[in-house]
Picture (spheres, rainbow, N blue to C red):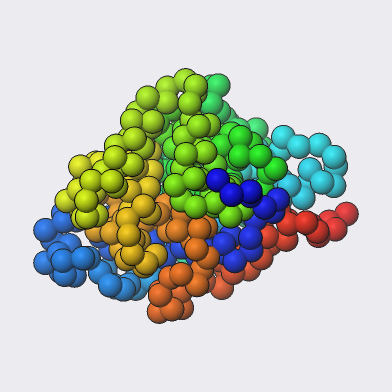
Length: 356
Ligand SMILES: [Mg+2]
């Protein structure tokens, strides 16, 4: 692996967030449709652009919403750590941000003293209900009932449930933005996911994605970033399913042309380990970033989540400019993503803003 830079590249960081939103929006109308139906409607390679079904052309879903709340909370936590000289607040701030998001989902829960999400709550597209996952809603409801928003209820050590849904990994990319070491990014990915997903296959893939994004933003190639992340996965309790799924994805990528049929042998992406495996498989395919994200959504499973994760990876590697212009312009939350990415790059860069 080439020597990595100390700070994340701002163009790649923007690409990570925007690519995730693009993959989410491209895949959202396809979620749960069979490959045959997708091909009937959109052609052999799936949709070549945003289509209006489900939430509207270019509309993002819970994957992008929660990724952005993750990013915002981590900026807040980092600024606070700098100001006060003490860290450790991130998991609590993540839970507050997720509970703030929960308010936008039409969920009833007890009033409590919490402020999260900052200006994100003014973005209608980020607060409205867009197909949230059952485990995420259930875990956050439980946390809300307890009325201690700033103390995470679900942790790696004390799992909140036995869920291995992909809702943990699909929001974890920003956990790779800051930190001086990949191991910390891996840990933060796991902690962020464990707030709602208690099974190792629910939170370890989030660690893998965070470590990959960490390396990619600092100059690594996809394969090198993946090997680094797999190294951090080693020795983690309960890592078998995630390690096996990634090994299958790498093997499959070396076995000839990348096709939806081959991709589907990795599963539907509804679970964490399948989602990261599908995203990695598509990211390792030949072709431009657009074609690879298209592959990541063209299957009979959780297309928006696999598209979002693959978009995170490819954007972190190639920058926002790697995606077709029409997709960059047409994705619903582009301006908010640009504003948030600038905040993240400033906070994680060599000269973070003075917040005192
Ligand atoms: Mg979704």
